[in-house]
Length: 511
Image 1: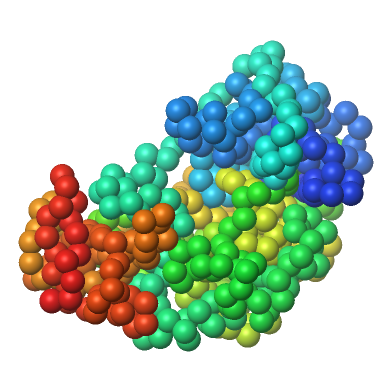
Image 2 (image 1 turned 180 degrees about the vertical axis):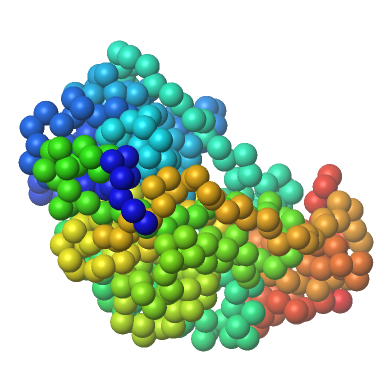
């Protein structure tokens, strides 16, 4: 593509980590985000660049991504009532438009594309994007009994794009005690395992192999939150440090939100970069695509995400590249199945020498809420600027593998406005209906076993003879069903299901 005056270019990136222990500064989320912004701006070597910024796009914090009734539990020391404006004011951007992003792990990549579109269309010359979490500091003070005051009402205004998490809570699953991602992703994981014809033991070992390259990357990343990154043999081994959190997931395999991390990137018009003498630092968003998956219970097959696969393919197409032309990846890694699904979409095999993560991923580098992929983007930009890699792909994901955004970063200009001719994901075209009341036999398609105070809780998705999906759950007691769930594999087993409380079903036993 031809470079024009308004072609958007990414000029700088900054990352910050505030580890517990020696040197811990106890920075608030707003302070952390502001420091990442200043780090990125200072990296340009241009004085007073903050005063020239037109827009500051701030990723939504975790505490602002939950209903108001839950906030006091997640913000015991308070929070800003205008987080984006709090960050802007700290950075000397009182005159900049402050935008607070929608929630979801896909948002950093989405908003980088939006920033490029704003710049390409002449609505801004310089846009900064950032985000932060300081959950580790919050929890440390809760444990110690020390207090903090993070409440503030900053001067000025901001534009709040809302949570955007309408599909995150699934009432029919919640009625069966399947509520959080740590409950839902194991169901996807087991379905992926079954699609590969693998035993539970073999699949657990395979997850360790999938995640080993991420741990290796985290171990050498100076911005990793955790000092004790596990070795290969630890990842898939059950231990005191590595308990089962939701079969088949062990603690070391899943995202860690107890972090103090922030990241920022600076995007500007190419003509502005030339004016400031920064054009040699230019990195382009060469390809971009985004898509939203079907609602969770409508999906026919929980082992795959057609929207994810379409997004990766479309981003490569927009960049005019093939997978073998990508030098490095940063694949979203909240749970292993997200990595595996992306690898399948890209045709990547275990043992590929190219990095699947530049950061180390959410389990080992850290999972700073909605802002994780800003770290992936910042790492990609820095790697391209340093000549370490020519083309880097960043895959971002939100919800229950629900929202996807993929960007390709390189020295090659792509479409000036990545949103001007966006292709639209049309969906799979089929769906699975949900039985509201059912009694009879059905075949388990996937499951999760949760540990509750009263015992082991089996929640299953099953398919009845009419082809409808049935959600059913029950406490596991001694007997054939318990033995199958503990020692065997419930997937494919025929079970008896009967109605329980309103809009719920229970698993009676094997049919």
